[in-house]
Image 1 (tube, rainbow, N blue to C red):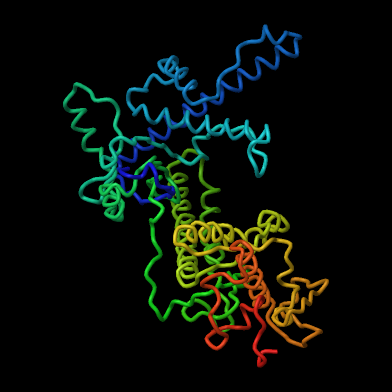
Image 2: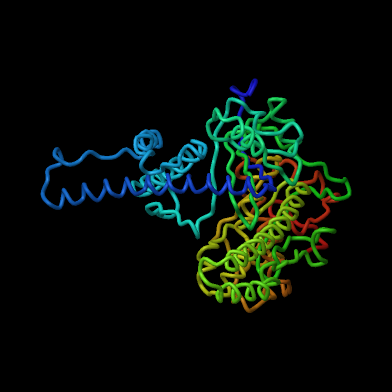
Length: 479
């Protein structure tokens, strides 16, 4: 990338839905099968080596006399694979060598994560030993890495993605057939990515082709310059500015500290579409029909594809709704305040609650807000999970008094304050407290009393003095 050596870059994913021909789909499945074969072989070799060394130690063999340890790096495993591929995969010439490299690279990455987690070098949950990939249950996928010829990935027609072919054959018929399968048609245009790569403003690092939700898709790992993508243009009437507090939930997908026309209702609630709940009846019908079919039958494969397409449609609908919501929050405000929730712990309490939380995808909403705020210059404040946002009275807090209730069960949806006698919706009260605490956290990070762009110059032009109060005293009329 010209001139990018001294500049910071950010890596983002770009996904295109593919429309392959039946012959191309067969070739993609053969590539995914080759990657799965190499992945399982690598894991099997590592497990055998570990078992052998463990048995030798149990027999009293000294460390010097133990069998040699197998390196878990992708380079070492690839060299070992090249020595045995004639016996392990006699058909290796029929697929691209990149398919085998993809499977071994995935196995090496999983082994590295397992090792780092075991040694304490990796944070988060404990990572176990990688699992073998099943032909019937794993997601067919294959990755290609080629950084030298950037535009060779994309067709000049702006509606095609190149598929790497096996080594060329001397047979002209075979070469002509491979040329016909070389370009995978995309349902959407690749014009924007093509132009950025052509201008040197983006660089493709890796392409992963996988079968998800009943459709083949190509995911590009792209390195952008830090200025890309910039904040999207928003109409002046839609631009709000300031900071917004977001309290997520299940009854309503999110509640803002104040209503926003075109985004929330009169109380500040954002509708929860519950996409999965609306399709549960159709899923149950397909599951019953699929359970009655015979293993290996064509009808079973057909119903499995129908069920995968329905799950894909549910996931796509949910993702589009979350993107619309996160885009509106990031583009209309200068800062967004959210709460750090233990979503995994909350979803494990009850089965129906876990399904509802999975349908809402609150973790995906936070992920979108995090990377979009970083890309578009919007500040993001994450309030600690132990902050009592629901139990604190937002009205008293504006006057500088912290009134916190000791208990507030989830069944109580209205917050009644015994001090100021105010009555407010529980979620709206929490959103206002999150906005106030988020403004305080951002002010501490900047080292000033107020954060530039989040406060007006005078109270007369403050469009919402009661919601953002905290550092400044509220007007007398609001007391």
